[in-house]
Image (cartoon, rainbow, N blue to C red; front, side):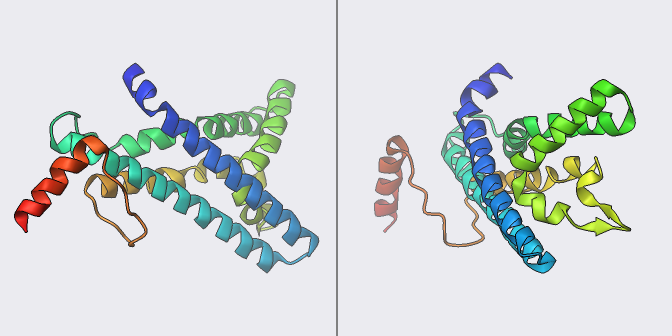
Length: 199
């Protein structure tokens, strides 16, 4: 576990920073749509922010998987197909912690938990701002952002995306031609020589 954190800490931090930047972007869009009093615009812009966020996660985690491909094939690294999931889980640690506090505030009506839950909900709105517009919708007159389990649910898409992206990167499979990853210099030369010999 210690080795995993040492090796993947940069990826976790980068993933969290991507989330934070996209959250601010999504939050600003939701505020603008809210001032325009246009629920359709709010939902569309929020959905765009979520898809953009997942796209960033996908490209980043795909490259991590592709980066691990050669070491795994050469036996220098053990194949761990759930690496993308674990990186995402660690990057989502703060989101999950806030969701836990919000859950406690809703299940246990105690002053301490209520205060902690209120603070956590405010922090979650900013930290998960890409979902703000969608969470403003209501079901049977109840806003989605008042349902504690929604804060757990919105972490799932990022985990699924990172799991799939890492596996695809590990197998060098692409959905699009957007990924032109450069092999590390130590691996590039032997690979290029083999390609020339094959010709």
